[in-house]
Length: 493
Image (cartoon, rainbow, N blue to C red; front, top):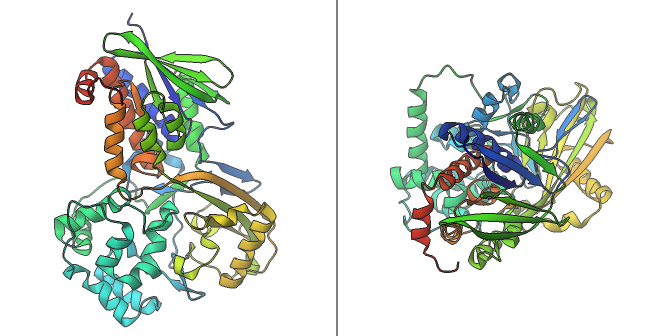
C-alpha cells in the first residue's frame, strides 16, 4: 500500500478548510493518499464566518452573504448538501440608499451593471447634478488608459465616470467592500474585471452591455439567484458542514494550536520536510504545509526561511473594522424599507454602512422586530474602534437617529470587533504577489492561501483553496517541483 503523504494546514478559516476539502478531492483523483492535519490558534473554526443565534434572532458577526456570480461558493454548498439551505435576498421594490448631505437617496437599481438605461433613475435620485450625470454618461467616449501601469481604483473611476459619480456613489460601493481607501487600492487587484472591460471594449459600459447580452443568451436549469446569497440558518452552517465532512474523511482538526515557528530540512534529494513548532513546545512534521493565515502571521513564520517573502508579506496592510448588531421594535422603525444604506467618505460620518438584515434576508428576526447591522472602521476611520462597546453603540445609535429617525431603545445589541481582519490590495499588489511566488518557489510543498492574496470574498477564498490543493498534490508528486526549483535557482531567497 502506498504510504500516505503528510500535509499540515495552518489556519482554520474558510481558506484553510476549503483547501483541506479540495486536497481530499485531488488526492482521490491522483490516487495519492494524503494524511491531512488542520491547526488553528482560535477556539472556533471558520475564521470571520461567525453566526450568532439568540432565540429567533440570527446575526452574522462577519460576512452575511457571498456573491452568487462567483461559482466556487455555490459549488461548495452543493457538494456539502446545502443546496436546500441557500436563500436569495428578499424581494422588494427598494434595494438600498446612499447618504448625501445628511439625507438618504435611493441607489439606482442595477448600478453595478453600468447600463445606460439606469441613468434615468440616477436623475430621479438627486444624487448627481446635471453636469455630474452628463459626465458619467460620457464614459463610452473616454479613451482606455495604459495597459501597463497599475492604477488606483479612485483614479480609474474618476477618469471614466467623473468626480461626482465617484465621490457620491461609486467610492462607498466599491471601496466599502474592502473597508479601504480607493486612493490606495489597486484597480487590477480589487476589480480586475473593470480593467479587462476597458482594455477589451474601450469602455466599462460597453463591456457590461456585451456581457449582459451574452448572459441573456445562455439558458440554464439552475435556480435563479440574486446577486448575493446566504444560508437559511446562517453562514456558520457552511463551516459546520465542512468540518463534519473533513472529520468523517479522516482529517485531524486541532483548535487552540498556535504555530510559533517553521523550520525546513532535507527529506530526500529534491524534497523538503517541514517542522512546525507549536506554542506548547510540541512539533508537527509534514512533507507539505499550507499557510492559510493572515499575511502578517505568515510573514513571521516564513521570515527565517526566506526574508524576501517575509518582507513582501509585511507590505500587505490590514484594516480593522467592527459590526454592531441591534434589534428595534418594528413599529418604531416603520418607515425603514429596503436593504440598508452606504455612506461616502465625503460625508465624514462615523458610520460607513448599515444593513436592515431582517428586511434583506428571511428567517433573521421576529416579524415585529427590525434587525440592523451597522459597520464602522476601515482605512482612515479606525479611531472609533478605541471606544468601549457601550460608547461605540451610543455612537452608532446617534447616527441611526440622525440619518434614519430611529430613536427607540434596542432590545438586543452585540458588538463584534475585527482587528487587522481586512487585507488591503494597494497599488502594486499583483507585482508583489509575483515576487512572493518566486521567493517561495524554492520550497516545493509550501503554499500560501487566504484572503490576503487574490480575493477577500468567501468564493475567492474557496477558489484559492482549490488552487492551493492542486499545487500541493503536484509538488508531492514531483510534477512541478523541479520546474519551480529551476525557475527560482538554489540561492537564498
